Image 1: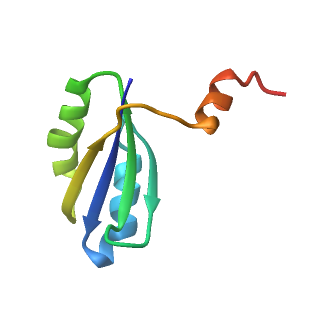
Image 2: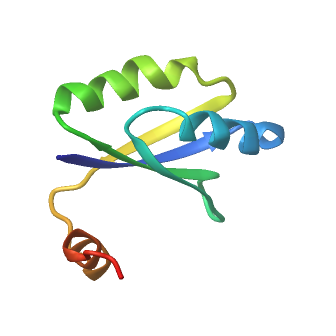
Amino acid sequence: MVTAILLINAERTRINDVAEQLADIEGITEVYSVSGPYDIIAMIRVTTNDDLADLVTNQLVKVDSIVKTETLLAFRTVSKHDLEAMFSIGI
């Protein structure tokens, strides 16, 4: 599993539209509207580096009003939340 964090600046009047379009892309598992130097953060979880490359270079260009992106590749996940979800069998 390849995990990446996508930092996005969008046109101010289109932030919500961009977030909704991103949420519809396969491989993007979460989309957050945030404060700070970026407008949106998207979590990407795909099977291979080739899938990540396709998403970033081919799928994102189809989303109107993205001004700038920065992609951060995660090396390792250290999260109690993820571990609990993985081992949870539900109640």
